[in-house]
Image (tube, rainbow over all chains, first blue to last red; front, side, top):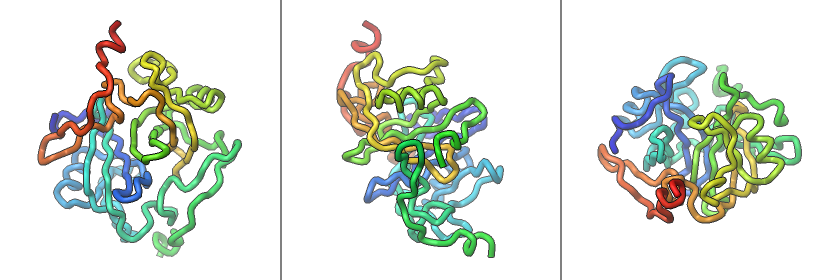
Length: 126
Length: 126
């Protein structure tokens, strides 16, 4: 199969799991439309479709925490991708953590696992 | 935050990334509704909402390749989970591969990486 065989959902998106190429840590789950995927392929830097903004953005555009794509995998249904990436700048999460998945279920509550690498107020509100 | 703070999408689903607890390999991306999540928590075995079937199913119900949940992480937006699991029976993918992400982009084409552990025709059509 090739890229034209991907199955985009009703909103023209595929889900993408971003995984640290060295540690295997899952850093982010995000969505790409065709344009975001093409810009990712053309530049080697992750671009996503931000549903909250309604547009394609380079990941790390504001924070400088961008991602270099090393490997792209597709799943059996051709509607989800895994991208193995090199995380530049340390933090993949806009909350300032290494991974967006920085909370773990313990009993009925999620507890914070990671440490903040930056303060989101200083990065995004200035 | 707790489980009641999860943000279900318009179809009542959250995306879940299933990751091998030992190797970190991403095995599957699937979706859970509240019922699937509750049955997963109650039994310790992964249950998903199969969009193609329109119902909750235990993963591996037919093939015997089920998954034991070891750890559950939630992302910053509370609309996606990572579940670290122990894969019983070897193959997470209904196509017979260890991982659903068994194809890698090489140039413009996806090439098969993994080896088939079972023949889906023998497991699902008999």
